[in-house]
Amino acid sequence: MMQNQEIEAKISDLLIKINKRLQHPYLMRYIEKPIIDEDKLLLTYIILNEKGLSEEELDNYAMSTMLVQVALDTHERITSQDLSSDEGRKNRQLTVLAGDYYSSLYYFLLSELKDLSMIRALAQAIQEINENKMQFYMNDNQSIENSMENLHRIESTLLLKTADYFHLPLWKGIADEFFFMKRMLHERSHVINNTYTPLTAKIMHHLNRSKGNWLSLKNQILDIIDSYILHSKGRLEKLWSQEPVMHTVLERRLEQYIKHSGFRMKKYAEEG
Amino acid sequence: MKLTTIYSHLRSDLSTIEKDLEKTIEAQHAILQDASTQLLKAGGKRIRPVFVLLSAQFGTYDVDRVKRAAVALELIHMASLVHDDVIDDASLRRGKSTIKAQWDNRVAMYTGDYIFARSLEYITHLNKVEAHNVLSHAIVEMCLGEIEQIREQYDLSQNLRDYFRRIKRKTALLISVSCELGAIAGDADSDTQLQLKRFGYYVGMAFQITDDILDFTSTEKQLGKPAGGDLQQGNITLPVFFAREDEEINTQLHALFENQPISRLDIEKLLHAIKETDAINRSKEIADRYLQKAFIALDQLPDNRAKKSLRQIAEYIGRRNY
Image (cartoon, rainbow over all chains, first blue to last red; front, side, top):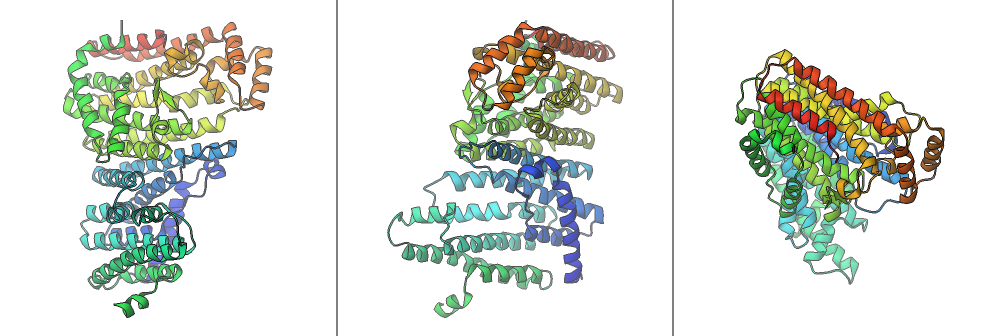
C-alpha cells in the first residue's frame, strides 16, 4: 500500500509533467495561468494506481484526463461582455484557442497510447458536461434540485467516466459526492462573502426574492446549500467506510475546505 | 460545371454522411440542438467529406467504415468555425447570424466543445490507430496554427514563409488529412496514402490562397461579410505581400496598422490600391503552381472515376470566383 508521502511525490511529479504540457510561451503571456484541480488529479491517480499500469501509461492517462479538465475550465473563462481594449480582446481570443489546444493534446496523448476506448469515454464525458452546463446556465426556471443535479454532473462526470472505464464503481460514487460537496463548499464561501454566483441567482429566483433583507435571504440560501453539503457528507462517509485506506487523503482535503467555508457540522448535529 | 455536379455520383453516400451528421449532433438541450442544427443547415460545400469518400475509392471502399472519417472531419471543421466566430467576434457567417451572435459566447463555447467531442466519439469507431495518430497530430498543429495567426496579426515583419506555414496549418492540413484518412479508411497501400496526402495538401494551399484573393476581389454579397475582412483584422495574406513591394502601399499599410481601429473607408481605399497592382495576378499564379503540384501527385495514382473527380474539384477550386 502506498504511503501518503509517496502519493504526494507522485502528484507533484504529475503536476510538473502536466504543467509542462500546458506551457506555450505566447499563450502564457496573454491568458490567465491554467489551474490544475489537484483533487481531480489525486483521484485520477488513485483510480489509475489501482489498475497496475506501467508508469508511462499511468502518466499519459492522468495527463489526458487532466488536460480535458483544464480545457473545459479554460473555456469556462470566456465571457460575453464587450471588450474595448486590445489586450482584453487578445486575452479572449487566446483563451478560446488555449482550451482548444489543451483538448487536442488529450486526443494526441491517447492516440499515442492507442487507446480508442478511453478517447471515446472522455469524449462522452465532455458531451455530458457541456449538456449539463447548458441546462444549468440557460434554464432560468429550473428547480433547485435539477440545478444541483447539473452541478453533480458538471463537477464529476470526467472522473466518473474514468472510474467507469477502469471498472471501479466505488470510486465513481466517491468522485460524484466529493466534487459536488467541494463545489457546494465553494458556493457557500461566495455567499458568506456576499458574492453572487449563477447558483445563488437561481436559488434567489426560486425563493422569489430579488429584494428585501439580504441577511435573511443569505441565511435561507446558506440553509439550502448546507442541506446539500450535509447530504453529500453522509453519503461520502458511507462510501469511505467501504474504502478504508486511500480515502483518508481525500478526507483530509475535504476537512480543509469545510473549515475554510465556515460550514459547521456541529450545528446540524445539535439540531438533528 | 458546379461543384455538386462533379461529385454527383457520390450523392447516395453523401446523403448517408448528411444523415449521420444530423444524428451525431443530436443533443438533449434544446439550445444546444438548435445551435448545432443551425450550423449544419447553413450548409457548406462538404468538401472534406467529399475528399474522404473519393480518396477511399483508391482502396477497398466501404461507406460504413469510410463515413467515420468523413463525418468526423466535417464536425471538427464545424466546431472550429463556432469557436472562430468567438475569436473574430463575428456576427455573420455565410450571411447568417453566428451562434455567438444569436445566443452568446458561452453558448458558442459549449456548442463548439460539444461538437468536437461528438466528432471524436464518432471517429473512435474507425478502428485504425494510424488514422488517429494522423488526425490528432493534425488537430494539434491546427490549434498551434491559429495561435500563430493571432501572434502574427498586424505584424509587418513577417515573411512569406510565415504566411505559407500559417495557411498550411489553417486549411491545407485538414484537407490533406481528409484525403489521407480516406485512403487509410479504405485500406489503400502506403504509397497511395502518401500521394493522396500530398494532393490534399497542395489543393488545400491553392484553396486558401484563392480564398485570400477572393477577400479582395469579391463583393460583400458573394462573401456573406464585408470584403477586406482579413486586412481589417490585421491578417496579412499573399496579395498584401506582393502589393507591399509598392512603396506607397507599404507606407499606407504601416500607417493603417499603427492607427487601429481601422475604418471601413481606409480599408476600401487600400483594397482599391492593392487591386491596381499586379498582386492579385501574382497570387493567382502561386495558387496555380500549387494546383499543378496537386495534379502531379494525382498522376501517380491509378486511373479511375475518383481520380477524375479529384482533378475536377482541384480545377474548380483553382478557378472559383467566390
